[in-house]
Image (tube, rainbow, N blue to C red; front, side, top):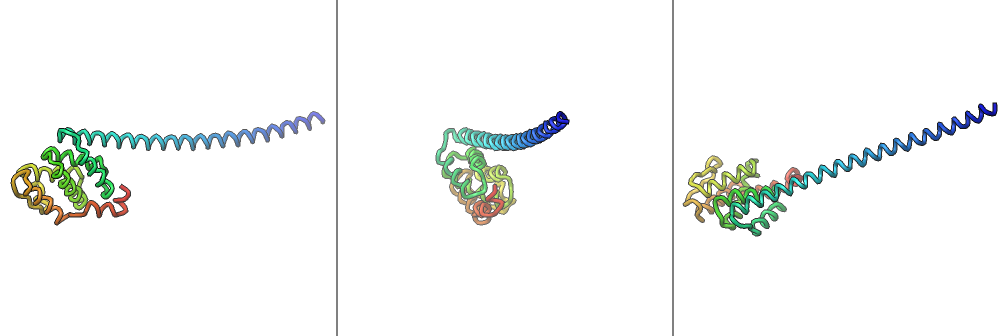
Length: 189
């Protein structure tokens, strides 16, 4: 009988001990799952940051190639416009690069970039498509913006053509890029 009681006590201690080990293993498993989840989330964020950096670098290279030099002034404009619009600076630099294929004048590129952002925001169109329309209307004899009610005349690449294009875009769509940034969806972009 003594041996049976001793065995029962030993068995009870073993059950209690086993239950404690099970709880500990369960807690370890939960902690491991949390660490794995956090690590996976961190990797996803790092991956997104790397992709954004690559987009930025590529956009800057395209702009430099289009101009034949690196323009700090245009990069600064892109950074400033990112603060007041829903467009990222890498996308804005891409617009500047497209426009830079038609003019090397930084001031003209700046004005045309703002017009492009407003057109894109107002018409809900892809920023690259808007840049293509604006740059072609300014830098070629084709007025690609006529279907949007924007008249553009004057000698290709001239100040007169620039002023008419940007003035007419501003009349119809001026301030749309900034207004879009002041919406919930714009502020989350």
